[in-house]
Image 1: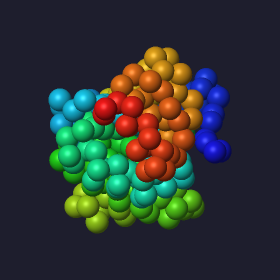
Image 2 (image 1 turned 45 degrees about the horizontal axis):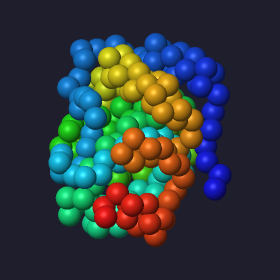
Image 3 (image 1 turned 30 degrees about the vertical axis):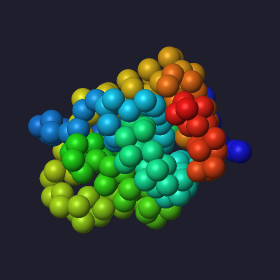
Length: 202
C-alpha cells in the first residue's frame, strides 16, 4: 500500500522555517500537552499511532477502521490508543496545533472533524484561513486561533515528538503504529487488526 514518505532533514528545515515565521506572536495559549490517549490505562495492548493531518491514508483510517477498532477494542478495555502527531508539511503542523489548542477533552473530537473535512482545508488555496473557519465553528475567537498558530512552544512540542518517533521507531511514513513496542505500518483494515490483536489477546 502506498504511503506518504518524506526526506526527514528537508522536512525539518521547512517546518522550522514555518514555525519561526508564524505571525502575530502573542501570549502562549493553553493547549493539550503530552500524549493524547483513549482507552484504559491498564489495557493489555497499547497502540501508538503516528499520523500526519494531511495524510489521506490517515484520514481513511480514522473515518473507517478506527471506528470499528475503537468499538471492539478500545471501548471494551482491551486496547489503549495513543495518538502522536507526525506532520509532513506546514499545513499538517497547523492542523495539529489547532487540535491541541482545542484542549484535552475536545482533542479527539477536533481530530475527527479535521480528518473528516481534510480534502476541503488541506487542498484549499488558503489552508490557514480554512482552518480558522473550522476553529470558529468550534468556538474559537479569531484572536484565540491566531495565538494558537503563533505558539512556538506548541510547534516545538509537536516537532520534538515527531523527531523522537523517527529516532526511536524509525517512523518515516503514515499511518504507522507501534503495537506493544512492535512497529507496523499502513492503513490496516479491521480484519488485519483482528488478526494482529488476536496474538496479543490470547
